[in-house]
Amino acid sequence: MFETILFVALIMISIALFICFVRTIIGPTTSDRIVALDTFGITLIGFIGIIMMLQETLAYTEVILVISILAFVGTVAMSKFIERGVIIDRD
Image (tube, helix red, strand yellow):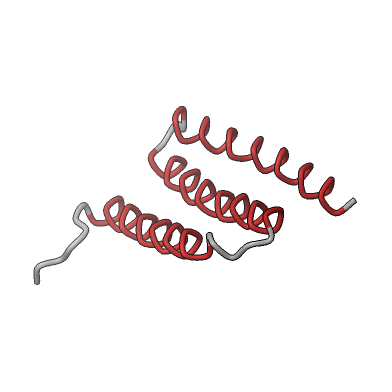
């Protein structure tokens, strides 16, 4: 029963990943694309977490950590670039 619930969750998360991908491609503004990429990263973390539960392993914990760090740093960098026009200030 629990595996069936996990498979249904995988299907729902796959649909969410596809919707985020479409929003990233056709987003009308750059801000929409940044939010869609951040949402894509968070949803991908959940997808990998469910796969870890299905396989009963902790092998992908490093992958989840790297994806979360890259998603956070990428979102902050792109937001700063939109706001100021540069990422690294040289004052």
